[in-house]
Image 1: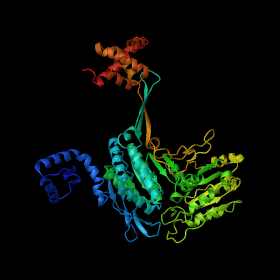
Image 2: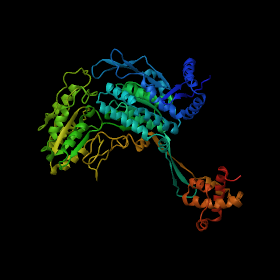
Image 3: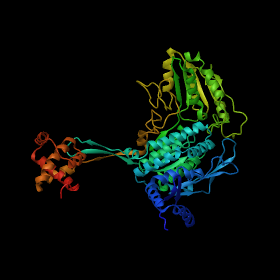
Image 4: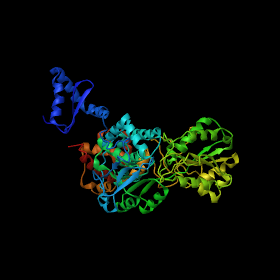
Length: 639
């Protein structure tokens, strides 16, 4: 019995399917095949034919369910088993090969300080194999299929749970927050499945301003691109940005923060299991200096960076502007004079400020509340909700970019401003084993009077982004609304919008009673504003902005050349009549696409035809006939 590369499905009863792959040894194949032969011959043949016909559909369903009872075929780690005594390893993927390194970076467990992950880092001397970018072919249909399969995989409870727990191990957040990240990623893949990848590359045609001229706009891959992503969303951000680059035919090299890169390594293995060619993405781990050198030597045509404003500004200069940024944001919430739904508003404020321990670029950094809200129970409810957060369920957890001392020092500096006070928090977490290189404080809110906030000596301090469970709260009166708007417009990190009408710096803006700064779905634009370097995430517009460039081609000269030769050759009969009709569309639209339509069905109204042709002189008519004759021959409309 000779088994081909395709998977074969055999069955002897409903609900029992054997998937036999080429690597299965012959004895196991014969054992399972004998189960089929043991049944009635006619029944066996009927079932075999049915299963053979349904194999392409059944194989994947079985692969996605029955096989997962025992293991995940793509996974090389178990999130619950990673520890100091059993560390995991993260490899690099370069030119289709998973490789280690002579240099390993040890990652500390953010909850207990153990060395629990070893990351193979590319050294400066070893980047030459990576800088040799190659451009991908536009695998529109294939990537649509990959998205379908990957979305289905992430929808399976065991796969979803695997990634949720892996996220929690490296970027500690509550299970609900981790699951939200997996869910958003799964929905993104669903939205860009099938033909939706093709539709992203839609082009356009515009009539020219003279005869024989037209403009075509094409979506064109950049080719070699680089993607750099942060630690706080180790699955969602890199997957959305990576797939957007792949959808448009680019060859990306992906660099994820080393503290959390194990999540994306496992996701890439899942994508490979779903059909993504291993050569289409390079995945590397490196320190900042090495990555900077790689970008300078590889010279990617576009880099998409998500992270700190400081690094973003440096890369913008180093890469001479060939970069799109989704950097830091100091996000605000404004509560107007109408006090309502206090319970809900308090809950939203708590979620926006302290979910994921405040480690979101969309986290609520400052709350402007009208004086009417000060008279309500809002602040006391926010205090109560913050007090419920605990390390046991990771509703508050380690801060990976600020130490405890740095955050408390910032609190103390704010308290030196006249009228400021701690509303709640302002203390370090107790009874934990979080290593000192990370931060651990209680959810904190500090009140600063708006008059003091606007002073030049205080403004920069008050609006400094602390990537942790921290926010500033201030109060305003009716006549102080202009002060609120001035405070917003002075901020340099406009991830959200201030005055929406008139002089605004617009961005991702949420308005209304249910408005919130975080918790955005994947199907709407999210990104900074007020900066031409700004990138978005999640939508078709975001993908088109950073993953493709527009190429225009002018179609002229051919008609002029045809007119010069018009007297040398003439068309007659059916070709002449069709050419005359085609000239009407060409003259009206200057668009060869109209000719394609005409060649398929030519039934123009005679009155319109006569009117248009009457405007042409003899030389123009003969030129058009010659020009169109070439197209008639090209598309073989006549023998």
